[in-house]
Amino acid sequence: MESATSSEDALRLALDLTVSDPGLSAVADDHRRAIRDFLEDHGPVALTRRCSPGHLTASCLLWDAAGERVLLHHHRKLGLWLQFGGHCDGDGDVRAVALRETHEESGIEAAWATPRPVDYDVHTIPARPAKGDRPAEPEHLHLDVRYLAVAPPGAREALSEESLALAWLTPAEARSRGLDESLERMLDLGPPSRR
Image 1 (spheres, rainbow, N blue to C red):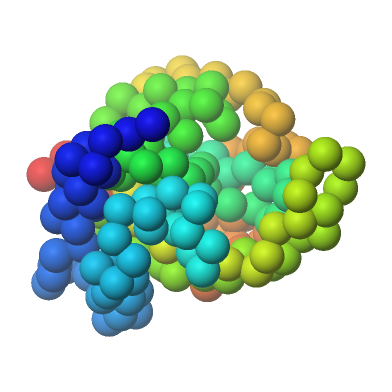
Image 2: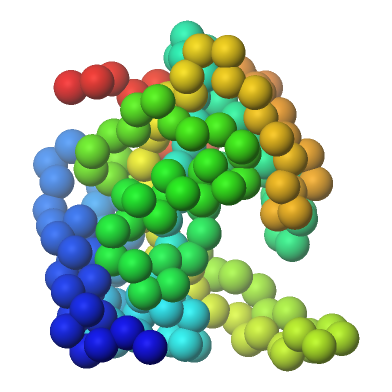
């Protein structure tokens, strides 16, 4: 079990990533403020799944080395084409979480990633009924902190349990898959530059 000090430190790390950024779109900035308010209201538990109203997640949109295609996965539980990501599970180093989840879900270790979040999103995860040994899961929020990354040249993806399929897609091809508005917003940012 983590100590109160380490959970407070994790919360501080996460809060540091939700400070104002003039480079964000108005929509992303609204989500950033909502995430910051939620973290301040709920404290360190908001970084864990024990926070039933919602919890912090991190994700990453992975571009190929040429900056022409993105790798998306067809999410097994949600049935949507998405960027890679997952729960912070108490870890306040949100960038590290996003990169770890990208590697675990795609088999690719990013060659480079944006040092700061490029987007934020608060979205509702639908309730799921109990099934087998898994208890029911109530509807809740994912408070997502988002990054862009670049795969190394010649990177080869590997399917994980999280996904039904993986696909390298141009932005136009990705949009044809019926993406949600928040992933469209990330695609609009284009491939990351190494500033």
